[in-house]
Image (cartoon, rainbow, N blue to C red; front, side, top):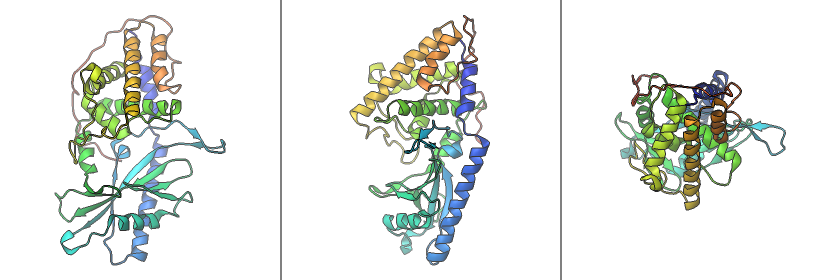
Length: 339
C-alpha cells in the first residue's frame, strides 16, 4: 500500500495561505470597515451605524491559495479568492428602522466604490470590493433585531430578506474540528481540487467552497494518514450524492436556513460534470492507495490536484505500509479562535 501522506502534508503547506497574506487580508478588512464607518459618520449621522462580523473560510481557517491566473495583458498574476465580512444593521423593526434592501446596498456601495482604485460591484448577495492582485472582499448586508437570540436576515436583492446566520455555521463547523486539524486539511484539498479543475475547464463550475465544506464535514473519514482519509471521504461523498452509488444529488445546509438544498439550481451539465470528476478522482484515489509504488501513486493524486501537488519526494520503489484508522476525531476542539 503506497503511502503519500507526506506529499499531502507538503501540499497542504503549499495551498494554505501564509501568515503574511493573512495579515494583509486582516489589514484590508480593517481599512474597509473604517471607510464604511467614516461614510456613515459623514453622510448618514442619523441612521443606524453598521457593525461587522467576519464570516466564511477566512475565519474557519480553510482559505486556499488560488492558482494564479494571468491578467488580461498577461503581465500580472491574479489570485482569485475572497474574504467575507458581514455588515450588520441592528435595530428595531417596530419603529421602522429598517430601510429597503436597495437602500442598504447603495449605501455600502457608495461608501466603498472608490476605496481601492479597482472599484466595487453590486451583486445580489453583497457588495464586492476589488483589489489589484485579483482578490476581493465581499460585504453581505444583514438586518438584525436588537435581541441576542434573533436571527439575522440577509439583504438579497433578488430574493428579498432571507434568514441567514453565518455565525451559526461557523460554530457548527468549529465544533467538529479534530485536534489534528485533519478536517480543515480535507476541506482545503477539496477546494484545491476545485481550483485546479477550473484551470482545466472554466466553462463549468464545480461546487462552491461553502458546499465543499459541508460535504467534507458531513462525510469525513478520519485516519492517521491524509491520503487514506481523503480517499475514504471522497468515497463517502460519492455514496451520499451519486444515484449510481445509492445516493441522492443534494447538499442541504445544516444551519439557518436549515435544510436548504444548495444543489437545487445546478444545471444537468454542472451536476453531471461534478459527478464525473468525482468518479474519476475516486478511481484514481483507490488506485493510489492500493498501489505499491509511492511515485506512481503520487502521480495519480497529482492528476487531479495539478503540479502544486509535488511528487519530488515520492520514492520510485515499492513499499509496505500499515495504516491505523479511526472513525471519529479523538478530541473535538470547540474553542478554536477565529481569525
